[in-house]
Image 1 (cartoon, rainbow, N blue to C red):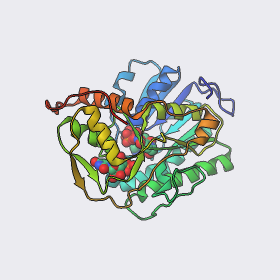
Image 2 (image 1 turned 135 degrees about the vertical axis):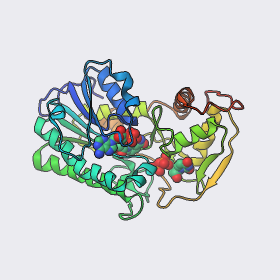
Image 3 (image 1 turned 60 degrees about the vertical axis):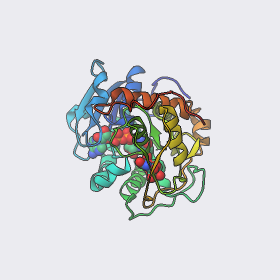
Length: 343
Ligand code: NAD
Ligand code: UDP
């Protein structure tokens, strides 16, 4: 993995970055890592699923600016004058509950939003990174999923607003590279978890962690035998940085290949929280991918990147953050936070 910001293939310095979606869960960690590396950051976000709380601690940084703006609208001077060497596009609802609630906004962010971000990169000869997703593989018929697999997506189902927006965003990104010579990269991010996930965003890890801390049963959907491979946000951000600092166009899978069933993940959360696992069975989710596991050969070989945070450690850090920041719901007094999960 190349270290430091350096310059991109057009020779532009990469000491300044625009991060669309920078007030979200992954985006806020990315802004933090870029600033720590000496990169000036303009964070652009309309706060539809993100929060200023996620980036509050970055305001003391002189090289950090926040612009509240919807990426689907024309970009104001306050963004374009940043003259970025790097443009990251993370601006999209990502949790299934969020994109079901915001179907048209999600499609729009993937389509018009991606075009605006690509135009910014084109104008400033910046390197561009699209935060795509393992959802482009849909409910995969092969496992693990490598980048050469083209997926099994229902184009009109409930998840299509997200999946097809990202597939279109990938196609547009590849076309800008071919047609306009923009220095682009596509990251296919697999399930990422960690501090700053919204406790009500509906995703598996925040749900399970909050439920366990509050002494409630864990809401496992369907058989619970569907799999996910969860990656700690520090690893995901390191993967995104390795990709933008490389010349690789992608797509590159960024994820942790430690595949577990949803039930196993529920058990691991209960173990870290220190409570017995009780399950509140929920109906299966329509088009819920049954297997998800990244083949990360490309990331390993081309970027020198692989995840380093194991599930027990990552969950321990995550549970601690949720316990420490709980607004009203104090941890259930009957649970003991052990800080360790079994395999
Ligand atoms: P998130 O919802 O926490 O962050 C998304 C951010 O984008 C939010 O701050 C939101 O307000 C902002 N946003 C949405 N629409 C916008 C618009 N029109 N204009 C400006 N800002 C807008 O989600 P996240 O988990 O941090 O995901 C970030 C990115 O990574 C997304 O693009 C998502 O598709 C991708 N991704 C995430 C995961 C994951 O597991 N977290 C997995 C695969 C891909
Ligand atoms: N899930 C679950 N209980 C919950 C939330 C999610 O069992 O409270 C399941 C969901 O059906 C899926 C997996 O956990 O099989 C991961 O869901 P998540 O929403 O985190 O992300 P996805 O990978 O589906 O986008």
